[in-house]
Length: 224
Image (cartoon, rainbow, N blue to C red):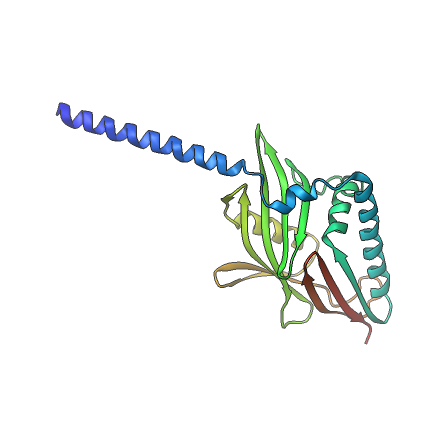
């Protein structure tokens, strides 16, 4: 009996040590600084961020005005412009847009879609959250597919469930039709852009969405 007790205590000690080592490794993984683009995006000088942010707003305003008129419309937006706007304009224009604990969101655009990263802090815990999403138009009119590849805290993978729930909730609150699917095991969120302009009531068609290194092009047409 004594040997059995000693064996049980030794086994318990090994399990405790293994759990502590695993917890330490997980903690270290969450403390990694995230993707390379994020650290680089945070170094944009304030004056450059303001200029890039103004350019982004001008592109969005031009796109909005052109989509109200009959004919073709389109715009090209760079990740530098988006990051400039996030750095210099977000807190002023949309002070309640970020969830509690989230700061300094930034993006990077490549040929497949975009990566998003931000700083997250809560109760003394701090990490960089990052998300990789492929984006493309489906065969259905005005339907955008967001294929979620991964979400991480530092280097540690996280489940995608909560991210998908929040995105779906936001879309429904904005009265945007949304659905879910899968592609090769990856979750896909399907968002349908309204086919009628909210102001002019004329038909709107999104005809292309093209991602490249550092920029995205979107375009379509309005009217009959």
